[in-house]
Each structure stands twice: as structure tokens, then as C-alpha cells.
Length: 235
Image 1 (cartoon, rainbow, N blue to C red):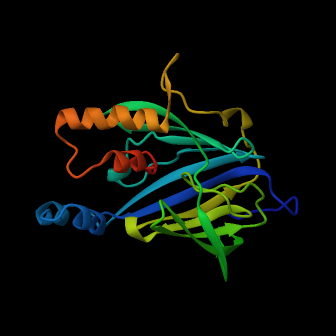
Image 2 (image 1 turned 90 degrees about the vertical axis):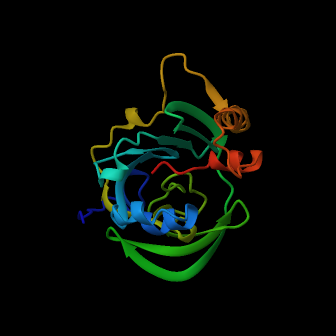
């Protein structure tokens, strides 16, 4: 863990590294039964790293140092403007990059009394739900003012430094926090190529649903499930 020297009572700019730990064996066994031979050949956990650079209410969440083999090659990223309440993300589907513009995800949070220290900062526990049924546990730090966090998660009174989604067998925890040498010029929306198109979530959902249907890869996917898939996380 990296030590942090506080030059001020409240923090509005900095860089946070998150370790993302996913139990791949449990995730695949739940979603794709009958893969025992494959599951025996992979490690139990996939570990990846991402960084969140923030200044005021602008945040950019993007790849950091490399983790385990399964986490390599993922170049997805999320830009969030908390003032405008919108996100611009780069995500990959069918080996093609897409830019998606959307609003900040609405999450119903309930703050609890539990306190946990993460990367040297005291954080308070909150629990929330999104898509009505997916349960998430978060630990946020009121000392870090921007109300953001990893992936698309936001809306608590401080920065989210710890996160867990039990259904996905995945956790996000800050491993180090830097308060100096922040290059604010890098906090910009992702692009795929000059002149590349930006899609609204519903537009891209319809395009991808048709592509997957033409390939015969939909399975039990409905248009609604495809729409919610565009909330997929960048890990």
C-alpha cells in the first residue's frame, strides 16, 4: 500500500489504482454448466488493475498495470462528468470498439454504519441495487469529494474505494492513491478513431441485438437483456 500525505482536509483531484478480483470458476460454473474440464485448467481468480484519474467532477477510468493472463487486452474505459450527469465509455463487442454516451447510472443507495480502512482512508459502507435486482456493496470515502468510483458506479457522498457485486463474484478495492503529479489533460472522453460514431445506449443495443441474432448467438437473450448488457463492466 502506498502511503498518502494529506495537504488538505478534502481531496478534489488525484489518481486511484483499483485491484479487480473475479472468481472465474464460480462465475463460469454458474453461467455455463458442463464446463468442468475447462474450469480445472484455469486459475480460481482473475486479477486485473485499473486507474481512476479525477479532477473536480471529471473522472476517467481506464486500464492500468497488467494483472493475470485472463485480464490482458481489455482496453475499455469510462469517462464521467458528474456535473452533466453523463458518461462516455468505450466497450468492445464482436472484436469491434464502440463509443456509448449515456447518463450516470441510477443506483438506490442505503448508507450503513460499518467503517473500513482502504488504502489508508476511512470509508463508510453503503448497499445499493441497480436493474432492480442486482445487489452491490460499496465503501466510500467522504474525504475524497467527487461522488464517483470504479466502472459506472457513483452517487454516494464521497469517492467509492471498495466495491463488491456478489452475483458477479467480483470485488474492486483501491490499492494506492496519489494526490500529486496528476495530468488533468488526460481526463477526456475515449475515442475509437477520428470521426468515429458515438451511440446512444438504445441505438447500439438494437444494432448489437441484430448482429448477435444473425450469428445465431443470442441464446435466451431478449432485447431488454441486450440493453442491460451495455452496462457491462470494463474489467
